[in-house]
Image (tube, rainbow over all chains, first blue to last red; front, side, top):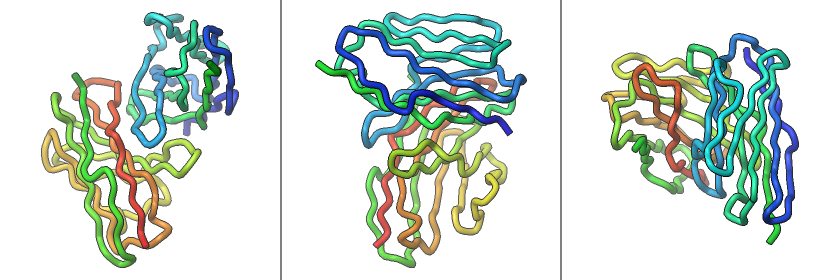
Length: 111
Length: 115
């Protein structure tokens, strides 16, 4: 099955700086890559997703890039704010829609 | 749009009892719902996939007689933890997906504590 690796496991950034989280996947057939943000005690919230026919997608301060050849995709958060502090999960799926999740990255934004 | 609710948000029960958790899609029809389990500081582990009107598909290692799933309608799926034991204590999260859609929307989760 699909194996998704996520790095780093923890990330501390100064408010206003950028944060980058990277994920790699094993199955070249994967074609859908969502990113979720999970705050303590809550369910994951979709923040952005990208499909394999697109190399980059941006939504305000959040962007995702995909390199199909290298089988990796990244989340970029610019101008970080304290409310960006959370656990972020990447995921990948093939056409059967089951998501394979990365291990998660705990992001802390220092004020 | 795309709101998923879960009930209850918290449940404490005695060992040996059964607990039912409801997952509802509030503003869309969910042809597929997923049930996950999450331990502290860990990722989400898929337990089973349920399609409306059919039997759930369980992941390897998940006991189907222990975790009963019913997807009775396009807006409701239930997970029943039967004869719960302390090791079943966890955070249970459902997600829902509309027909022909890839995006899964997650519920807020249910924290189960078995004493």
